[in-house]
Length: 380
Image 1 (tube, rainbow, N blue to C red):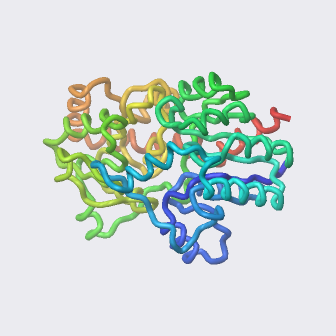
Image 2 (spheres, rainbow, N blue to C red):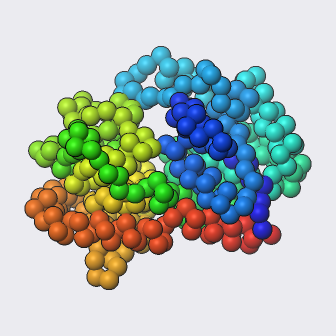
């Protein structure tokens, strides 16, 4: 049964969306390829669903010429101070947020969604607005979250939990926390996956390979220290190797000499295609597993070493006796395994092939959407 699905999300890379819309003028793109929601969008459309989006972090909920990409710095900046002050003011007392909530209600009144898909880290949409939307449209509310409500969410987000018919949580333990906050149901389902048309090995020219090739590759966020110290410690332990780091944000001083630039979307796929080993350590707030890189890097044909977490072991089992991922238990174990697999190209390449075949068969966005459709049917 096709549904009308209204995404309520923040737009993190507005310039990437502008460029994607220019490149594909005939495609009704809601999200840029640098965001996982883009691939959910593609998979939902393939299944015949009707989609629209409301960008809760932008005035009017739509992409505007003034919207700019965000970059997080390690130090204290005026922008960070202003943001912290604004978040302490209740949404009901901020005219701009009251207007944005009214704009969402108006959009839903016109679109008449069956499903309202709320992305995590909401700091704008109030519980009162969500209650109104449920009453006025009859839509089911799904909350898709990749982070811990204990660590990341604000009061406005936690208070909304009781309105969610279903929480989709990357991390099982985060899902339990949402249940404790009042959500009606939780399912541990990785919000990331792979799209074989996009997450694939990319052929590289010789100049590209020369610019990107390295033994150790890392693409992702490394600040603030209280959220990503495990990642930083892992990379610091590997500082004696040929390593490249790509991040759209600032990085700690100890790792800046390894930074080669920023990477989003296809650029990330090309980088992991060029490297020998992709290190994929989860943030400090993740104890089950399930970050974006797990499935995307595997689709690109990368050999991954990740921290040993229950979800990683569950989603990446051995297939026909061949591992689909390598995990480490501590920093010494990480260094030992990196040394081993750099010396054994054949083992590394066999594992990378097995990982790619595994995610293409079990962890595509099409498979994720099929699972979500069955969960929606269970909601009634």
